[in-house]
Image 1 (tube, rainbow, N blue to C red):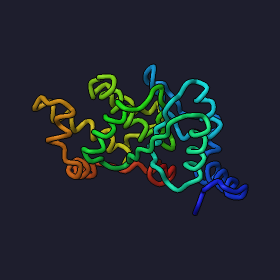
Image 2: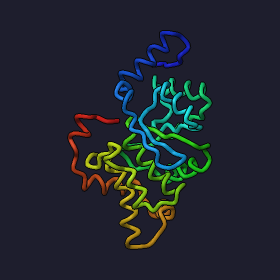
Image 3: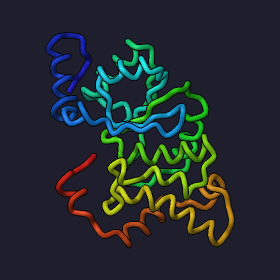
Image 4: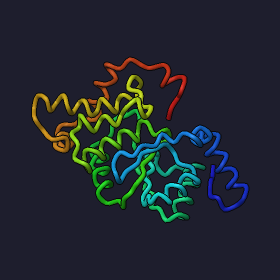
Length: 219
């Protein structure tokens, strides 16, 4: 399905995709937004109107954690960012999987090179946004991991009991290792972290949350 916005019918299709398939109607009044520093805000998927509002508040960069997919939401977001002079960065992360070391370090580099103030978002603003917010707070703001991982919180709708708990488990795996052998987070990721093993360890101990995995079917 193409969302090129070049014709009225294509634009209408993209808007319908954003509002209905992507559940944009739920985000009209609730953006799950939270400033985590004086230069970074996290939220759920913004609409073009919300992007306009963010531009008026000085946002210079938007980080789309859902990736540059062929979808109505992305086509409209890309257009809105261009219209309002905001740089759009597509940086894909996952809500139910571990990430290879290169993704962790690319996130670190991303936070150092973008123009601030910035906004980062996933679909709901709960899981991927929380994971990246934790990395931001550690790499950019120097918070210890045990403090930074508090960005993965029920306050922003992150549920640890489902497979999304793998994000928490990743950080906890570092803390457990560092408690036995003092090591920095970056050193652990570079030399000790095994994504497949961390995932396997999580799955062995995981008790599925039917609400998250079956009923909400959250992306």
